[in-house]
Length: 149
Image (cartoon, rainbow, N blue to C red):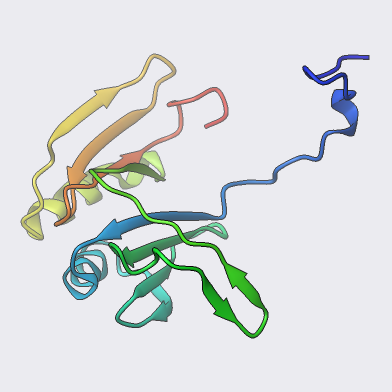
């Protein structure tokens, strides 16, 4: 049987289902939330001065953390969330259906959000790229970007 570099059979390796959360770090949570509310209209799961958690569709969560506010462990009744943080412009992609791309382009223009770049992928997908107020690069991509999407 196939094994990993430690000799463990690959058939015994636990499987990951999907990425559940994407976390970005922002200077001003309210400013960032206003942008994401206006552009995406996601439903809030949590909203306070430290974090906004959005339902980003298909059992995924987008987390907007106040930069520097998560540098210490957070001890809650159910356990501890270890410290984390990030710096610099992150990148993430939301999956969209191909027929919604023109609507997204029109919506972004109407919201005053500049499309920074476009990409046509070898597998047939299309991506558009734009930035949030913290300079994070957001991609909207149609199927045909990866073999898996």
